[in-house]
Length: 489
Image (cartoon, rainbow, N blue to C red; front, side):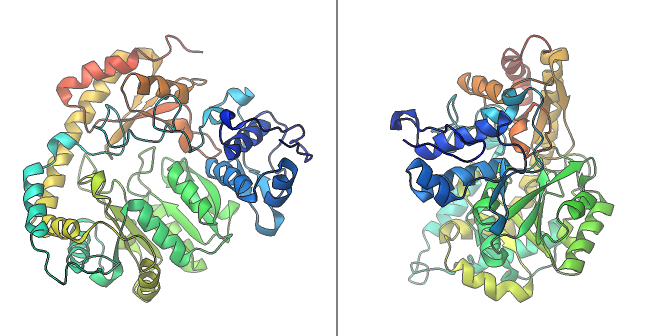
């Protein structure tokens, strides 16, 4: 269809439509050139217009390919300097055989062998080991149905019209009260904005405060979908490594001292599970207070410390008012609720309200009111306490079963925090291909390697224990162990 003439892109060709979407083909050609060493780190890529003209395709097609490459960490935007191959990219010594070469673009349908390994099986029961979902068998269905029916039958004229896009007042008040008790966050209902899940909360924050080209510290490894969303919002994502104390603030200062945002998971680092240490918390808050930067605290597993009481949120230490707290009900209740929230600073509430009025709000009013009752009547606190005990039991059972079933072929990394454990695999193991085989077998693990933007976190599998009863742990562990390589490479 066309030929490129930029260094490292010589000979790029596009096949017929049957070979896949055009933007996917461009993505594959450029990614292969990076992995093969034809496009070394720091190389400037042609502009969207330039490459689109050379290939005879639409500018938006090239942009879609670049956006996906940026979301994976292969390229970074430098504003007027253009798009560069990530200067911090360190390729594995064995070249294209590394983990990044197997990453799939987002157009693939479903979580099976040809799908995105991060996609869950949509609208179907949770698979064994599938991360990110609570214990469905322990959800109080009858109680929830009663609360939902209570409000579904109380739709008066006022409830039938357009509602406040910031969320139902009853739910905003319930969240504010709950956070004060459970997470050590003092806030008013006016500071709480109800959103369409975590993704909606992050969208609200970036639209309200992020400027195109702003640098954002992002944990490496970190949640790939958050990284992709920040890139799509126009941010320059700066991967900052983590260690046993969490985000390395000094490394962040060295890589991007003028960054305007830091997105962190301080209560339970995603995906490795350590907590951000107190010295690091204080250092991060000092950076934000000194520079006027913003800290987005993603507290996705904050309630689930399985040994000892939950630690207070980072926002509870925020004397300077630089932390935006983001939470979700997907982990403590149900993902199907599609409810999240952001807690913002009082001076910013007008700006956030204006932006919220232009975005997709959270769930319908009866659902929001049912969740508010679930909180204010004490059901949420009791449910979380029950889940902590249940998850601790299931985590112990699955960790022991995996260690017995896998033996020396893998190492179990099970921390006392969160809703998943890690199965560390020998160097050189293709965890993405292993995930696809597991999906074919009806299992739902997620490959660890996809969470790293550059530094690498090794091969492994993220395995949820929430939906595996203790008595079923042995059987499920053996199913997974049967898929592992039989010897170290």
